[in-house]
Length: 233
Image (cartoon, rainbow, N blue to C red; front, top):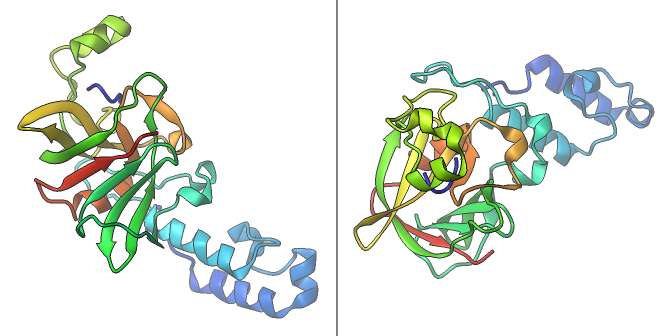
């Protein structure tokens, strides 16, 4: 392709420990409250704790997938890139996907001035593209075939010239939205990434990657023909 390419919540004991810690000023200030060690929340605010708990739920393991997806190591993801519903004014219709490569975000317009926001990796310098497209095709655990242009740049990709079967090591990951313009495949995709440390960086040859759990969430809510707007970087 041209754009190269945990459900574990806080347990009841952890939650009660956190509540006790918040009520105990001395323990809170000292960072010694029960439950704080397990959660890694010493010195954090209640909002931070809730954000972390939600992230652990959103990015838990998905063992029922065709290829079991492990939990995301959320310590490798800046919290600003966790999936969230945010205020986002747009004239686009609900369901529209807006990619903002300059901020490393993908938005799904929900209407009423809100959007679901996902952290992303995007194209590196020289591979950035912007404009309007639409989802022309969707695929699960797709076969990945590197284009000729990539093989010229990266000869090691030649071994997959006939296609790399779907799986955890496949660059397209668990789900892929293939972008089209005027009936033609652009070779650009929104794909599932299993590398949390890439979120918030420009590393691909134009494609846009979301964490696998985020991509599955977006994929399930995105029909074919959905409009996609890629903003200038």
